[in-house]
Image (cartoon, rainbow, N blue to C red; front, side, top):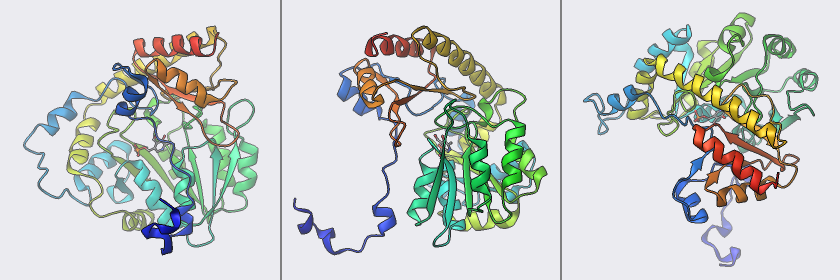
Length: 373
Ligand SMILES: Cc1ncc(COP(=O)(O)O)c(C=O)c1O
């Protein structure tokens, strides 16, 4: 159809939203099967937990407490109490979201008046850029170093310009490293009192022992901040959609809650998250298994000349030395979903999350074939 004849032709779109880049979501199972002609697909594109989730979550969803015909608690009171005890803050400082991604949107709505500026990194978790852009904010992105790490000096000098929000994930999606205590301290010290420091710890539980706990460090520093955590990764609840924001004070929490949709966290997600927090043993075992497999996969990749960035999480990010989208197509032909990076300047990078042992073996064998190593 000719665009000029579409019913939308005379509408005034919000130009910021109409111009947004598409979120680079992992390929669905159905599409991967259709394109590859394979049934057994290794899903390594979306940083999910290959070991599933705690059986306690499934028990909770099969119990009479699950009442899908009722509206779930819009305040997530019980879940917030459980989380408050788990992370050691007041429940009034926590806001729960439909995934932590909803919190990124709500934070942007709450703290980005017109003509705001936002600081983040590149490559990045897409929504740290997309949500501010939707509100017309100017987004400055600091590239990673040649050593595939955070460029602390460049971040420090941009922080001094006092953006409204600083979004950074640690461990860093899509690259993998995490900020150590000294690095986090440098960024905190460079942050202006008018900047909201959003520390996205979606992969917190997967970090190496001894790494800083963002909630504790940022609280001790006393700056305005929000720490984001997710149930989608270590707890394996990506499909339920639940994450949370731990705020430096109740006023920040109040305004973020005002910016979210009222019944944002559904009944299954609230019950499932409470059950997941109650089964720390399951989560810790899954994390140990993922870490061991990630390191084994890294060693196998080294044998075919691939050197991923340092990873404190459940994925590896590496330069294929050629167009990563073509490499991803080659892997898909073998029934493997990975994520080819699309941000400008990083099109030769590919991110593959750690799967079960047989899936990781398939990944290495397929890369060997596709890259002719
Ligand atoms: C850094 C980071 N933040 C936030 C999210 C969103 O997680 P969710 O909305 O599933 O909680 C992700 C998901 O991949 C992520 O990588």
